[in-house]
Length: 155
Figure (tube, rainbow, N blue to C red):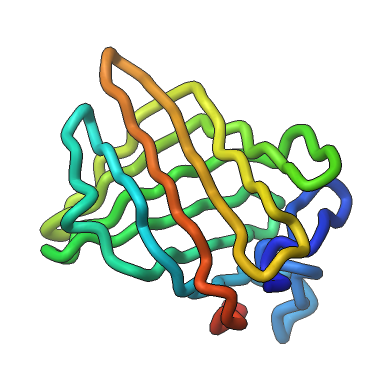
């Protein structure tokens, strides 16, 4: 699968390749819906793996920050947001500084420290592992892509 096929200027190509320009010439926000398997999800120390949906959303913002968003069966969302860090060989790291839990139209951002690591760059099935903590709470996610081409949108 190509959603992690390398890095461009330190930004993993998580179907985010080059950010297309918006109609007014500004860089757009790229959104990719990625099919796969949510192998584990922990939100504020609660194991929510069974409620995790089989799709993940990758967002590349014009300022090059990246979010990985996981959905839950009840419609809640958990977002890991940060900046690309170190890339080497088949592995790229995202330095995560914020986790946002959104449910029932309320978003709760939390400052955290940790990372998301993508492995299997350029392979058919890629792996994303996020591990962060803040204010005594742990957040983590493990996701493996299905190997299909993600749906992509630009705002």
